[in-house]
Length: 330
Image (cartoon, rainbow, N blue to C red; front, top):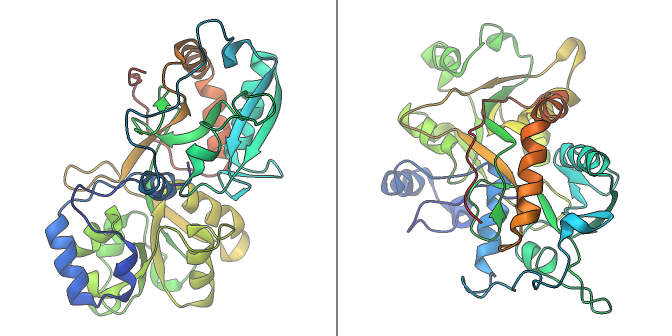
């Protein structure tokens, strides 16, 4: 969902980082160590959601035994953000929209959306919220949440992506095919670059590990404007030359590359799995706790349609890694 992964236990909110100087940021990063950040977008809002969450264990109960579950409905009711490309929008242009359309088609259902900005209160106002008239839940599935997200039950993962380094067609970057190539640029050039990152992300650790934290331009995982995405902020600054490169979550990297093709194409080079810094995260669908039949239905669909899902994801230029098979117990 529209969240950047949760930060490590005991870490402060990422927002104060913007006002902190380089030395303060260095101290914070050294204290936090390797950050447990989920997917840049898929987890910042997950963290924000926890800030206004109901107490764990007080989740609204799922349907009673006598009440038919979502699997029996003739409509796929989807919880989504109306303005969060590349994931979703109210015009059906995101990859989560396309996956939901395919899911509805294959299950023989119509599709209907409940929209709400994916930030604090998203789960409470969508998946856990009932219609005042019908008393039915407003929607039954969130198309993208981090695997193991504790605000919902999660299906088996359908996507495993990784952070990527994005840069424009600058001549100095012609030889850069991997993040390691970027680090191999002449030291004078490398240490003159401005590199966009999100606070408390794997990118911050990567810069710190390679002596480049002073070159960071730090962005908050979310802005105050629900129509503003992390990717759009970075894209503007890359376009204007305010920054020279950026390290962002894979789907955002894919969106930037797709919107800047042609003779002056932008490039995204993904990070490989790393033992020291976790760059890759898995994304699942989120459902209410206790709705085992519905979760099983989605798990079965994901298992039998992974090739179709991958085709949708690759059409959005999202860097993919193989997913695991296991899904957390509901």
